[in-house]
Image 1 (cartoon, rainbow, N blue to C red):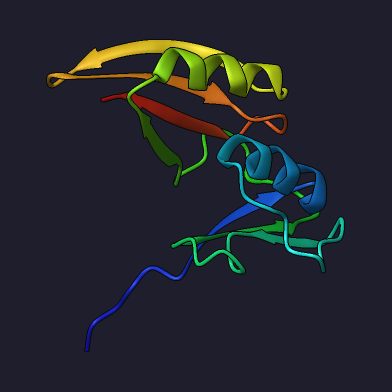
Image 2 (image 1 turned 135 degrees about the horizontal axis):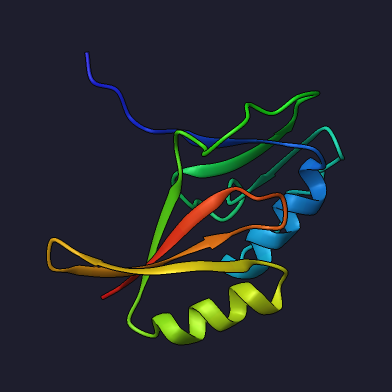
Length: 116
């Protein structure tokens, strides 16, 4: 039996609003059925995995256990774009021969942009 990643799910307060942040960041549309309770991006474009956003009453405190890693040859531009969309630059890292920046989305979920 082989498993494949179908979706990456983000627990949040406002699914449609957070989906819009990532849709703009990745330049893909939010799926039309988006609501404050549930939203997706990437399904209609064939993006894999699909990003799903689900409203939860109480988020688990502390750092999210799963985070998204993006990469770009123009990482400085990608960081600037994330900040202009409402993200917050958390820090710069250089470990194990890899460089990346960590960013918090508008709800505080962390993601990385690798410098490739």
